[in-house]
Length: 176
Image (cartoon, rainbow, N blue to C red):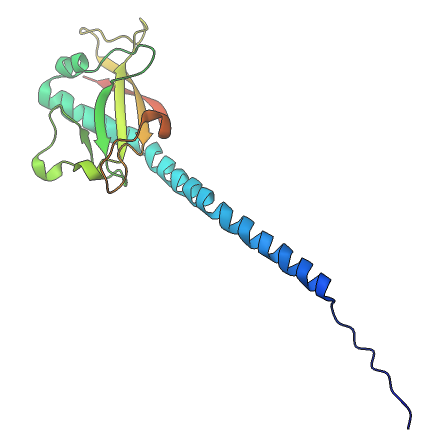
């Protein structure tokens, strides 16, 4: 009887250990990337919502100008000065469906946002440059608007420092 030699090949213990180590490192790297990527995705979604706010801001400013007077609103909006702090505050929900003045002629109680629902802070300033400066005899009011989020931490209502918020700016013009 002839002896038949089996020539089956297999991985060595060292090769298996290296493969498992590479797989473990890949899994750890992927898991480490998940939180920053999900934060970035959420911030991108919030930025898209913030980009839809200019029309809402204009509608709210028109409401305030109609209710309290155009000149009264213009006088409540501070003039721009460096650094930009303490603008005329508006607040908006995370979905931007509700936006209103934080403290000047707010809507009826049913339309007001609770503190925990105030996700976007919209601050408004008047221009100081002569061509855009507010003139009571003029027919327009041009304002600089900064939207920052998250204004209050979702669900907690705690104000987030400005340095930790994302921001978007734009200009809105109101006509009498």
